[in-house]
Amino acid sequence: MSQFLSVNKALTIIRMFKQLDPFLPVQIAEVFLEIAQNEGVTIADLQQRLGIAKPTISRHVQYLSRFYKPGQAGLNLVETRESPADRRAKEVHLSRSGKLLLNMITGVIDGEELTNKKIHDEPGGLLS
Image 1 (cartoon, helix red, strand yellow):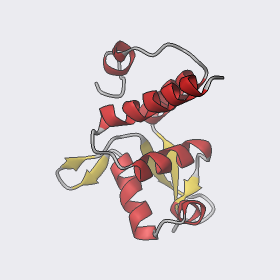
Image 2 (spheres, rainbow, N blue to C red; image 1 turned 45 degrees about the vertical axis):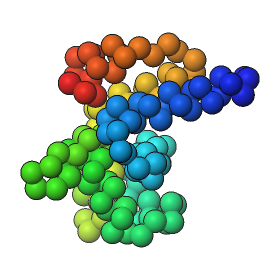
Image 3 (cartoon, rainbow, N blue to C red; image 1 turned 120 degrees about the vertical axis):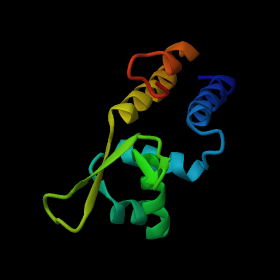
Image 4 (cartoon, rainbow, N blue to C red; image 1 turned 90 degrees about the vertical axis):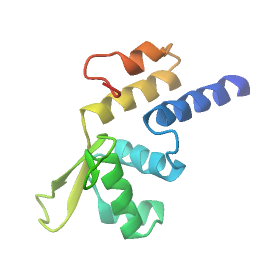
């Protein structure tokens, strides 16, 4: 694959995150991708894998969840669930919208054509 094509794919993926939030920090995108790669990961595992403080990881996961703060919606890309192994721990899984975003990201990597219509207008899509 040419360097130009690789960079173009990376830019396309970055722009997908920017459509969700134009000011989205790259660290939050990194947390999303780590969750996508390791569904069911706990907050503590994310902290260890990414080397980010636990309060920061918790805020990032909240922002990626349906509700961020009182009166402020999150991105609705992940869901947290109580761990069956340890009720004190929360496992993080992709939501329906998170799975859709992941499919679009892997489509870009695999060379599929992505249109703005696919991001905006798909029923139950990310921005609907």
